[in-house]
Length: 107
Image 1 (cartoon, helix red, strand yellow):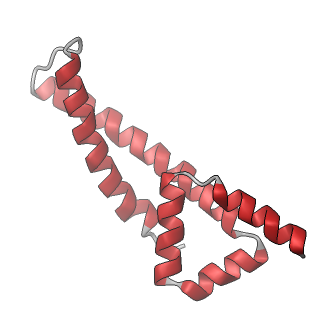
Image 2 (cartoon, one colour):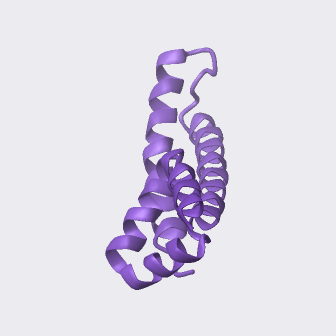
């Protein structure tokens, strides 16, 4: 039993940004489900799944947004300052969307 607990703790220490947010959200909104997932050892796997899904959506949104807005604004792809600005803008939009569609989604 003690080994399982330490293994779970090790799995939770290496969480990425979106998995940590999902963990915080679950703990805040549904503490009993969080406890159940933690006790049964299913929490790390769920958080890894959420992390993968979140980054997949994040990357897709960023790439689509950059492609569309660069064409709309006639931005030269070699203009690193404008492309960086555009990617930062896209990342903020992607983070908001991921929070709404992946992190806060009932599971």
